[in-house]
Length: 98
Image (cartoon, rainbow, N blue to C red):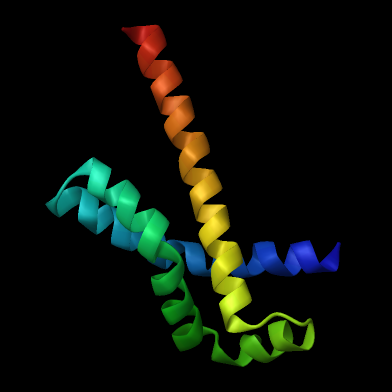
């Protein structure tokens, strides 16, 4: 259980950077590109922000057996799942309203 709590803590710590990048993409380009950028680059920019602001916490994750690559992979999969669920909900609501 502590591993999933650690993964979720990491994910919530790196999520704002990916969401900020996605929001900027949505404002300046398009909603479809914002979703693509969030899925593909959200975990990368999240890791970059996490390494910048929470560098001392990486030792904690390393002690639990997580490498940077594994954390980025898990964040990528969580971003993918979150995006697919939200897109399905939005498509369902749009289908009901139309």
